[in-house]
Amino acid sequence: MADIFFNAVKNKYRFPSKRGNLTTEQLFDLNMESLDEIYSELSARLEAMPKKSLLAPRSDESDELKEKVAVIEAVFAYKMALREKARKAEENRLQKQKLLALLEKKKDAALEGMSEEEILRKLAELDDN
Image (cartoon, rainbow, N blue to C red; front, side, top):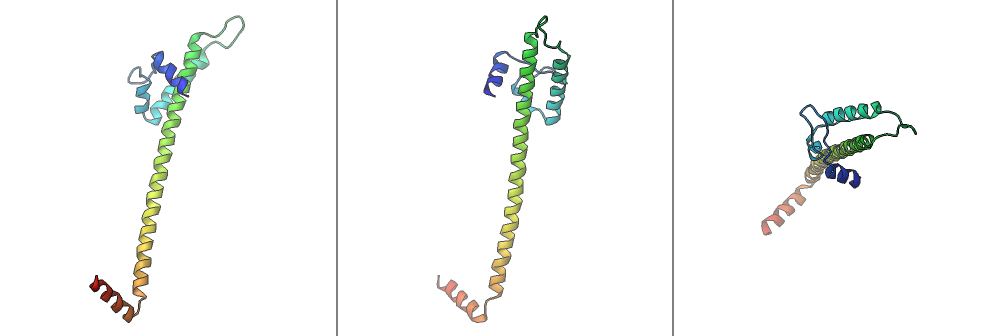
């Protein structure tokens, strides 16, 4: 994957968008929908290229288009992985919050279950410290 980004930067690839041509670095600032639009346009251009033939070999332009499509796919996959990581982190945060609340309830229930003597003994221990 590093090779496609190296080639994209080295060859100064530009990607068509509604805001004009974008650099490889700017792709990371786009939302998923914008990346999908660029992907669709590049894929359509690639499909419109003449098919492989011994009499008319594909041009270097088709190789560049393939690499551009690969770059878009890689950026999209990266952003999807980030989105999934954030979703899992939020899920874990909520689970932890629930568990801490349950723990507090258990502690309160344990305190409420103490006898009068146990409560007095605990209070005395706290006063001694």
